[in-house]
Image (cartoon, rainbow, N blue to C red; front, top):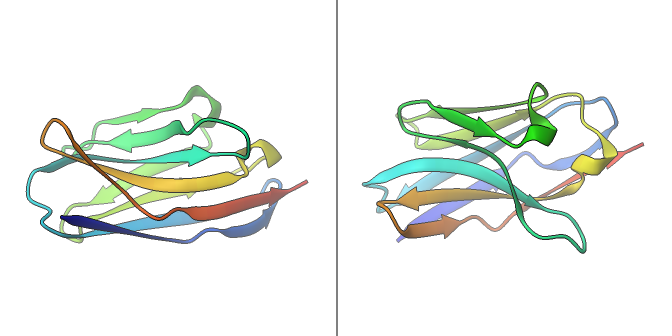
Length: 116
């Protein structure tokens, strides 16, 4: 089993910044892709950004140029630096880890609220 613990959410004004962290622990062998998803009220969960162990990244179009995902493999931690936040970024943000090809783990979620 893998445990994912997120931190860094909160309330910020539009245009501000937040940094999310997600630390993985437990049976972490074989984790390649880690990333962030978000779910706003009444909407489906959507991909925000993902990063492979080798550092390849992929972003949702809505966050390109504003968010940056990074990873510290030695600490088994993934980060999401969010700049120029907008009200539409308000959501619960979930950390995700893919182990092998099919096994997924999710964090408990952290609330990000952007006030306009």
